[in-house]
Image (cartoon, rainbow, N blue to C red; front, side, top):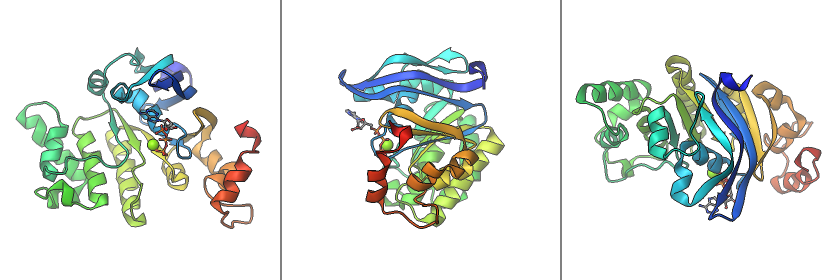
Length: 269
Ligand SMILES: Nc1ncnc2c1ncn2[C@@H]1O[C@H](COP(=O)(O)OP(=O)(O)OP(=O)(O)O)[C@@H](O)[C@H]1O
Ligand SMILES: [Mg+2]
């Protein structure tokens, strides 16, 4: 894909926290318009940092892009504020389903809309309830009393209220029961297909992510160590072993064993 074709183009970015801690060491990735791209990697690899660099939220955590650039629809965004970036249509759903616990479900959604007149607001609410009918049935419940799955739906629903072009999702499956995870992944796929929203999906659950994404990147220690079509990554023996937990015989590997072996892998240099 030539650079001009990408909706989002992250070009060799370096990110530091507190001016000294180098966390991303030259990360490049692309998200095509209307595509779903997965970003995989172990704890601490730099997945959330990559999303925050794109959304501009890094600046709120004393993080800085010290090299490289980020383009969205052909425009440089790496020096813009989170508010400006959101206005362009990029919205990040943070890890750990941050909702306003003391507000009701619907109040959370209204806050998500930021601005807009009454008619636009009710149209957007209807759109969210269309994709998350369950949220409508609990619209008056205080968010703090909602289950983890409901809160995750609410966090995504709130992002939808801004009518994004690109959704950055940080581990939406974390800590949720498999059935709920399925449901959320199906809704994400529908939002992509029916609303044309492009998605950059961060997941430790590689199996799941590779099922719904067309393309994937693997991040290790602040660098992209592997990328390709999701189908190719699913079949890759290293991915099968370290991210899908499968050996050649299909048996489960012990995590520590895999970790130890991983360090010797050629693609990790
Ligand atoms: N605000 C911060 N200040 C300093 N260091 C940070 C900050 N946020 C993250 N880091 C460090 O940057 C590295 C990458 O963190 P990041 O949260 O991006 O990883 P991740 O891939 O999202 O991990 P996880 O799967 O655990 O969420 C880690 O070593 C982390 O300790
Ligand atoms: Mg993270």
